[in-house]
Image 1 (cartoon, helix red, strand yellow):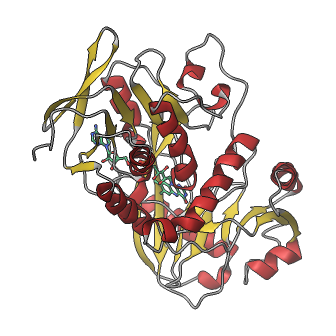
Image 2 (cartoon, rainbow, N blue to C red; image 1 turned 120 degrees about the vertical axis):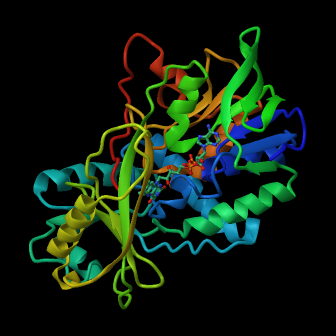
Length: 387
Ligand SMILES: Cc1cc2nc3c(=O)[nH]c(=O)nc-3n(C[C@H](O)[C@H](O)[C@H](O)COP(=O)(O)OP(=O)(O)OC[C@H]3O[C@@H](n4cnc5c(N)ncnc54)[C@H](O)[C@@H]3O)c2cc1C
């Protein structure tokens, strides 16, 4: 494949939800010419492999605010881009199995409520009303936010792909970024499998492979790729509105409009991208047992398919947004863990602002790449890494 030009102002690596949204914001700001490269196909990465969960219940105000802005953007998505992403605000319901977990959820509830969102703490009976058929004693209560929900991720990626091309962005699929060129210590170009192009900015939106790319460009970063698995069952008559998440082990599932249950739970795998993203029989068995223990009437329900993808984890649970102080022109848009879809519209807006050299309205202790470079680790963290 050959590229349309020999030089661009911005090259974005990764045509997932983050790279495409960033391209959109930049194109709208007139920051072209812009090239997005992806060595795979559309939706190769996490953006084509996730559970579609969109939640605003978080431990920190910083994440709540980004997520809340993202919800507003997803509500407008059909109008803005002409694609229906089937955003259904059926809520997110976190289950507590014991008083300690309920106390943790109550702390989250207090912060979310104080941010003006209609969070509710539920009794065990109120949980049972929303999760029909839940096993007796399976939850002592829960936290529920009715404006959270789920989307169908594929049309979001397709819609943005079409939008950014209409906006003049070149998207080159099947093209790998293999390194960067520097001049006087800053970015001068990007070396790709389709040739080297000049650019003053490169955006690392490579999802689970972002750490590989940064390191290949000589930047030591703490991002770790972890493999997470997910499955879809046969369809059932609709019975479940919210995304259900269990605080103890991170079991999560929602019911799609076709009636399938889609969800996952974490079984440990060695970190890193080398082994790819196969699904494992251990996951399917563990997930099936967990689901049936929680909802006994699921016994006998078939699993239609199972798959896996990478989370891109950071030590403090916040994404990494902005220019790397060690390499001017190298901008991070990564480290989203298992939650990049639900933060994409708002986080990518900050990434675009960083590319344009604008001051960010984010606390650098929480989001800047510089936070990992100091002598002491930051005391801030976003630990509600569930569902
Ligand atoms: C099982 C699972 C469930 C999840 N559930 C949710 C959920 O419910 N809600 C939510 O918000 N998030 C969820 N996530 C996380 C979410 O999917 C990701 O955070 C998000 O999709 C990341 O988007 P991205 O654009 O950063 O990366 P990706 O979508 O991974 O895109 C990165 C792209 O970069 C390309 N690439 C990598 N290296 C190179 C290179 N050197 N050159 C060229 N191209 C390159 C890849 O081919 C890939 O297409 C889940 C993830 C998984 C795996």
